[in-house]
Image (cartoon, one colour):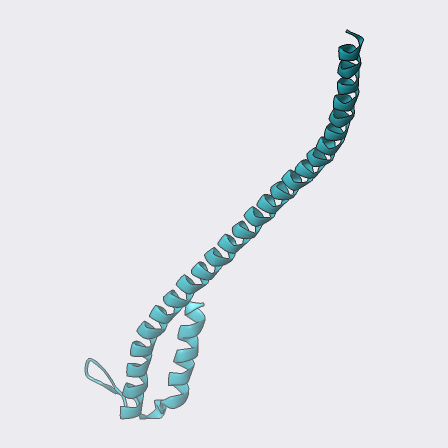
Length: 123
């Protein structure tokens, strides 16, 4: 990615610079003003772009981390909701069981009270 970016910037310099004006002098080359400006932009731009790329990579990592945490929260929510649903179903079944037990208890109490009343009358 970084190499591609540098190549694109180099192509811009090549297009914006008149290479026929470059002259060889003692110890180096003499460039036109436009070429110096373009090379200066490349050097500054490259440092800035590398910083931007690093920031973009960091933000992508943070985004991936946020998505991962969101997925973990979703999974935890699903697990919690399923366990709560199972508890509600269990309580509903237990409440149905309690209704029958109270009904049977009421019948047993009525029968036993009648029996006890009969025992008291017989004495």
